[in-house]
Length: 207
Ligand code: ADP
Ligand code: ZN
Image (cartoon, rainbow, N blue to C red; front, side, top):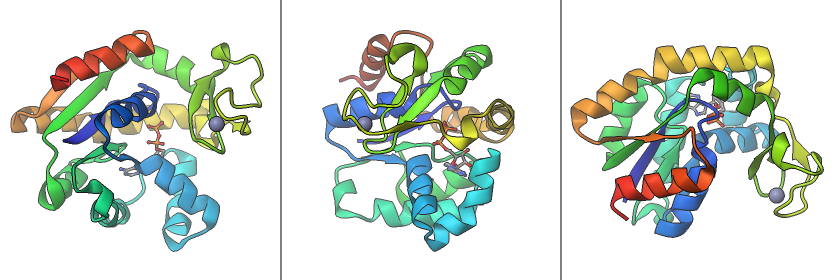
């Protein structure tokens, strides 16, 4: 199965993607995670991406398209993939159609007010990359899943979040029409408990 998760920052794409990938045995490809790791390691891609990621803007299309093209050529993608965070522009979506078009696109919808609350309270594990909301944590420094150190992403500051939301509305939301026209879009309400959202996604996938 070749899947794309669409939806605004903070919609819960990462959390849901991890669950769906485990269930379907396909690789979870998060371009945000790949970029953060490239930045931390100081690779050439990381150096190109750093300023864009930290300001909440989009990294140039050609950088992302090359990164995804390479990743999708790995053997673990032979049975499909789940892309989380890509495509984010119509140009990226057109490029993906040429590389290996998705068969289903899941749009996880959540209102902006809710997104702001989720993102400002988000903490990420340095070790397992899982994300949590401070309201779920007894200790906001330690990962309840693996004991790793939790941190707040630099781009989860209020100013950067509002930039990311406006970038989403202007650049990424047009993909809803793009994939509707291709006949591959399915919309899921992301403003619900995580387990219910997972069931809704599996249901939309016919699994
Ligand atoms: P979120 O979905 O919470 O905004 P991600 O982890 O998916 O965060 O992405 C973080 C940042 O990485 C984005 O704000 C952007 O700067 C960069 N990025 C990730 N994917 C893409 C992409 N497909 N195109 C351009 N930039 C990207
Ligand atoms: Zn962890």
